[in-house]
Length: 452
Ligand code: UDX
Ligand code: ADP
Image (cartoon, rainbow, N blue to C red):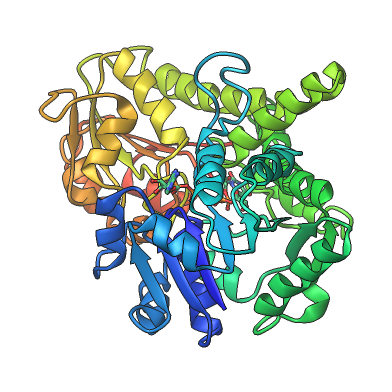
């Protein structure tokens, strides 16, 4: 059995590393157009920071796991092809700012059709709008090359920062396929791969469209919980209730459950916003404007939360931060990843820069280039200084703005840090991450989410 995965990103790389590790007799090759990315996957400095990933990659790389830019030959030689390329929100034309841009998926399908090489199973791994499999199918059958193709949907549910644990022991694996005999055989073939380390009961099979829609729905539900608790955080700040106490109280109801109720400066990442906008666009497209508005509100609330946090910084600092130095602790959209896509840090920092603040930014894993690109500024711009550690970032600043819940921020000596800052010194905890007593005892004026 030979597997090819097109796209060596945050999903393709870790997922294929896990399949290769668990299925020693399966040859897994990950291909990408980006030579630098492939070179990094072949080195000890992987392009994706993820706890446990390097060890997993090393356990199989060179044996049954390979990374290459030789796309066509790998496709030709493979029995199963995973499409794991990016599907960003469209930034042009019809559906701009809402619909998913499927140009990368389409170009993969065209390439698979072009190179031929035998019958194949093509698996959608990337999150896609419902009925994308139809497009892939039409492109593949138009090749008219005598080979038969089965299209499966197998969305990935891993969360960044915990990818290895999620892949090793997932809540479920979802496989959607056509209800024909050939379709069901293809589903079975893919299920057999996962069954090498995952219980059969956890492998759910559905029709293609249910599988495609389930991924969008799962992300929409998860994001909705965060927007719901963030909406309540605003009311907590106005009334003296404490959002963590409210979350704890409601989370003990087994019908609600305790997870994904952590109020924060807002959700980020490459999936939630993109998938909800896409879901909402689909609803609009299918003549369901009320349903579209309902889901759209989850994104609106997230924008509102980021804006509220920024407003709080402004108000606390006398509505003027022009020329002031502010320390930004954390830039990734969550801890344990080097990914800053859609991170709340981006919009907060941009707003602070519009107010002419100077930012000293430190993140343990996000690269300098990625931070500067996210903010749309060039190296050497005097308004932003990227620091090598938290002490450097906080020195001589008026305020600390904590935006990512990295463990190491809990270990800092805040008394020392406070002594090197301009007074009065402020601490804005966008994740309610640091013990408030430590911050207050150090002398800071503390501001948290959903708490007075
Ligand atoms: C998400 C889904 O969890 C995953 O199943 C899907 O495959 C991809 O999208 P990811 O975006 O990697 O995964 O991370 P996740 O842990 O879901 O966090 C997303 C954002 O929500 C982060 O910015 C995180 O800080 C925020 N969040 C999460 C909260 O603000 N509060 C919470 O309670 C949980
Ligand atoms: P994700 O978070 O979904 O994994 P990434 O952006 O991290 O998304 O990774 C997607 C990868 O897919 C990128 O490395 C990109 O270069 C690659 N890619 C996009 N289109 C193609 C294509 N037609 N052929 C090969 N690789 C592609």
